[in-house]
Image (cartoon, rainbow, N blue to C red):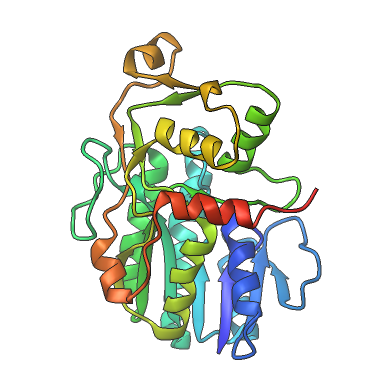
Length: 299
């Protein structure tokens, strides 16, 4: 199968490229924005996603049968600071990609986010109505609607906080926390910010399955356990035999004193129905962090 991964040079994208590229059944092409990835045996294409004509040429060249769309302005602060750019990348470019998938008969797997929800209650099901409260969340919700309107064959994959070992020089929450704790630096962890963290390889399990088998509709692929960031950080510390006392709980009052936002931040996704549909194992937080440790890069 010819697969095009848009946003392939990002954190999740590199894992997707490695997984799909390892299969002799797939001919995989990936896109990057500015920094060329190292040669990994796959085809790489530089493209500016706001240039619709360039994206059209990309589709003509790669002739994809499946498209995994990961590219986004995903930093909430960056989206607030430059809302026009965020809208152009997250919404307009997604609309173009969905339209081209329709024209080329390609199945579109669009990776979305728990941030389409309002964070008032958390552990949201697939059939609940999105009510985003950030510009990032609004653009992803609008992009989901563009996918539904423009593409004939699509899967929308919402996920939560994704952790794993990033490409050298890049960041991710779990490795950054591990490095801080190893160096004796404390982490003030919110007790009222809730997520369903997922190890990147487990998210890629779901994405790869959708490439191979389709499964149209809205799916939630995230971790099994709905936990606070304090619980998440503590679990990482304990699994890596680090000083869990350096993970310091910070409640809403402490967040307010520190000048942090105190709006409700209870996100996280109920994935039980999606896991049943996909017939996919649903690893716990402990299993995910154990896999993170097992996959740790050498010294």
